[in-house]
Length: 303
Ligand code: ATP
Ligand code: ZN
Image (tube, rainbow, N blue to C red; front, side, top):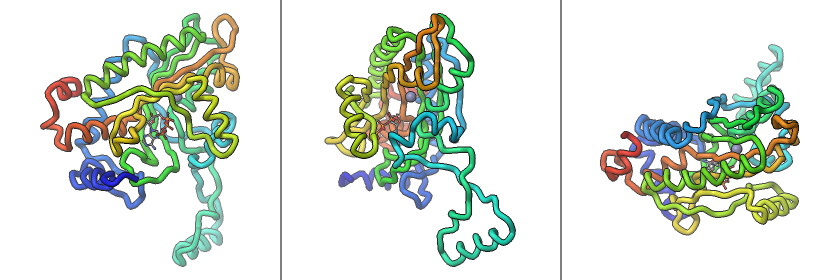
């Protein structure tokens, strides 16, 4: 961890921008922080709404069977979170309370439910699109958002366990989705310029698990399938990924059998905005008092 990230996080707590819960990476948001999130959300919409995307908002959990089929546990078992619940009888209930009272693990008396915590906003989208049948001739474009969970506890403000991801997702021909990604590289540059934070674009990879993961990660980089827009927040030397641009080729199209109007397998791409990370970048670069932010930044957000 960087030397002063503790103090940045402490500063956010002191101002009531974030509120501690006792668990690293799990925070409540204060009103001012949320106002900036809402304004940033509206700014994203101003850049994206000319495309006529279908709006879908997801709850923070998704269907476990679909999560299994998506293969998340192959790539990222270390990040996943599942929802468990008690289904026992009176005797087991008493046992559970005894274990709690003794400070022992009581969660083994729960069973997995049909819900897992959503790891990325676009995971629940693909099966929905697939179920509708072949895409219209111009493919599909979606404006989605979800609270996401990743088990990566950290004292860096920018690495949360529960955070929001807004995405635009394009589903269609290879040309349509690569054009979409190129358009968003340009739009995102303009958007971040309006926010007055330093940024640069770079090739990236997902944090695939284990030895096999190293190969997946380097192939993803070699093919330039993932880019990130990075902003220095906690550490000058290690800027933080605030936006991601992912081209999945036909991976999700084949997996979910998403067909284009001409019967070909669909390609997909998404641009993901880390809502909290961008807002943290604003507080880092313009200070903890929003009234003192540069007028151009206030204009972009509050208009
Ligand atoms: P990182 O490399 O920092 O772990 P990532 O590349 O895995 O991030 P993506 O899977 O591309 O992230 O997620 C899309 C966006 O969600 C990221 O660009 C980032 O802004 C945000 N994000 C990812 N993980 C976190 C987290 N733990 N806390 C807050 N925001 C996050
Ligand atoms: Zn996505």
